Length: 329
Image (cartoon, rainbow, N blue to C red; front, top):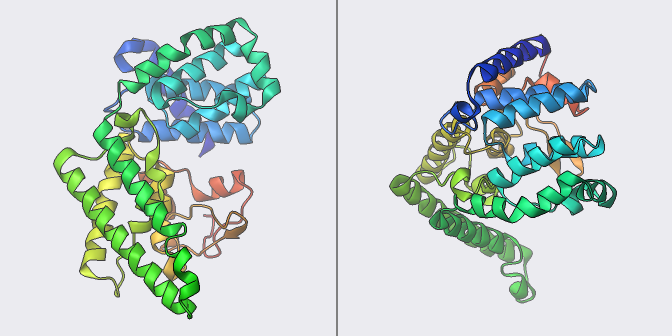
């Protein structure tokens, strides 16, 4: 698998050399499976402690695609640590242009930040930063921002304390839970209808129209992505099928991150205590949840279709056990 990924990378490097940068750089219509394969390759190289190859792989990925926000942090930290400030500057520029502002000093610590900021490239970064931000903001679609912000706010509001002031008046906890559950269900249903209608009228509110910000890992999409099992209502089945078909397409277009899609799918199966993609999950950030897989023989085929690396490689890199019913072939 690792050899195949490296052969694939060599071919892409050759193609990059043959074509002009402006002709292929950050191809917004490209199939993002190529991008995901490069990011996976870089993670494998980092695991093998081949940081030089990993940096080159990240360079190749970001020269050809507008990267996802989470993917920029590792190469920035690597080049900061190695004091390769010219590369640091380039990665930061791509990060800001494609996904917007971030707290460089808070994310990477004072020592790394100070070393870079006092260099010639650090001063160049401070000078050009406002221009990059202004360029990024040209991609904002404020209707999309308003939709996602209002959905996310209402979603979190009903899950974070709604009815709590009234709990003392409810003599039975089951009454409180029932009332809260009804409110959450109503808000989820209303938000889904808003989201569906918006997509049907204007198209999916992609991350590139939000300055590259990965807002679709928001709780809203996870909460309404319910499994269409035998007990589901027709509305719940419609909701699941709509999100499944809509989001899978957006993964290939680079508008929705594959890990978020796979997490939504696995979350939707939570009641059945099985997983479709086997995305690592933790209970309240501590206890690792290792559900058995649904159709384990085809899990890597499903993962490859959306750009995820084979499950045995991911679990090895993250030092996590394989699902209990998965056997490495």
